[in-house]
Amino acid sequence: MQSPFFTALVLALWSLSKVSFSQVCSSQNQDSATIVVDQSGHGQYTTVQRAIDSVPAKNSVWTRILVKPGNYKEKVAIPEDKPCIVLEGNSASNTMIEWADGGEVNESATFTLYAENFKARNIGFKNTYNAMTRRGDWSSFKPAPALQVTSDKVSFYQCAFISVQDTLTDFQGRHYFESCYIEGAADFIWGGGQSIYQGCKINASTDILGGGLAGYITAQGRESAADTSGYVFNQGSVVGTGPVYLGRAYRQYSRVVFYKTDLSNVVVPKGWDSWRYAGQEGTITYAEYQCTGPGADMSKRVKWEKTLSGEELQRLTDVNTFINQDGWLQKQPF
Image 1 (cartoon, rainbow, N blue to C red):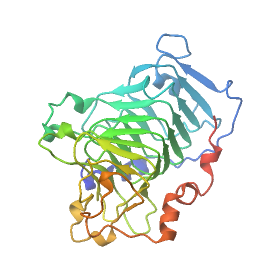
Image 2 (image 1 turned 90 degrees about the horizontal axis):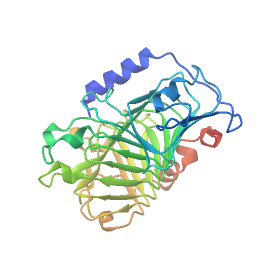
Image 3 (image 1 turned 30 degrees about the vertical axis):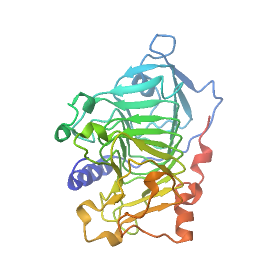
Image 4 (image 1 turned 45 degrees about the vertical axis):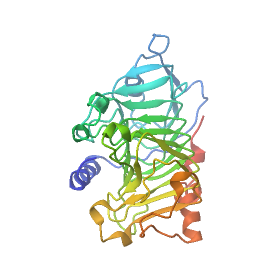
């Protein structure tokens, strides 16, 4: 993850460089709006990017890109003016988009999504850049996202996201992740997104850091009390190969909730880290409710962890009140 100033600048420049674009998507027959990608040549295209490039600008029809099993070694981006895409693989274990790039977080993601109204299922995203770093040489690790998403109304089902640092760059917008697998060691779910992670498995592969160093699952970047963003983990699990914090505060109003989540013993007893905001923890919203497992022992948690009202907990953990107020999830096809 880059410095707060750098990332704020990136987001500001990105926003200024884009023309506001919002497209209402209509549906067609599923077969008539399907593009097939197959490395063996038995589809319209052999790469995912070429299939995306074939979608017309300002697309208004839900278009399915069906990716046949394979390891697609390419760097993929969906521009802002190509909304209404469903990206579908066979499974996250046998249909993978993989690349190896690291350094500048806004340039190194394997899969970058600028377009709204997007859905993916049964496909994996991997960035292998830090896998080439010697185990234990943590100072050499660089941001290497598997996914970077900066748009609204985005969902992922049964997908995998694998890297070491900044695996899932959940920058901004409303996002829904269901039954996904997310692996990393340092700040591996981070940004200013407003997202629910439903039934997801979080694998903290922090042994790669060496020396018993603890990693961080989240680094959420809520900017103010009025900012609606935050990460909610609902009915999933946290496992791993070494110690990990549930999160650290990337911004002063950082907000993360773990609800009915099974926490293994890799979770550090303190649970959370205020990072740059030591002494200002009153504005940070970190909470856990009805979690299970050895890592859910609250006896040594930081004293400033929040107690939410029943109304606030309900609002944050309910998909319809937190991210789906306008019913966009139900409008996604296939």
